[in-house]
Picture 1 (cartoon, rainbow, N blue to C red):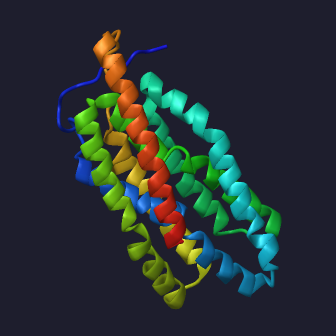
Picture 2: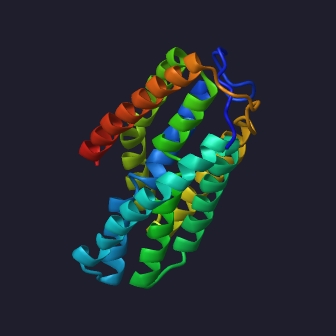
Length: 231
């Protein structure tokens, strides 16, 4: 297994923490907060039953949880850039596919896939990238910054999606969300480090990394509670 270098640097070489925060805002807004409004629009068009439609949301959460461990392992091997870029681009492609759906089973397929890709784009993924690249104090500061960015996702995207539904339809909304994910993946996540220099950690670094992992886990837990309440 690759041991990742923890640096004392304050930022990545090619992408700022602010840019990464904006990307998180977009990822949360499109992949997490869009479901209820899209589901309501589709139920109105296809006369689907709400309990059946929201089963897709449960499936999405399940697939996201199942993907979390392999995604985390890949990021710990230095593949954070590839994971987050690929997940964001594939999420865009899924939204494009979803814009053409007309059957409930295909709705389930699309949102099960989006659940998988949430594991590679939301807090678990980006916090792991941060924790693997920076020392504990810097990681804590950057994780707090990214959490604040993500916290504005509902504030921005719920009214944005509502406006898009008013001026267009849910298919056009999904195409717009597709474009956002593809752009975020190619313009921001793709600028994350390809990997960091392999070397063995010292005992002090291993202890520090454990502290950082604990901070990351607690932050993710608290952040998810906030997002769940907002939804």
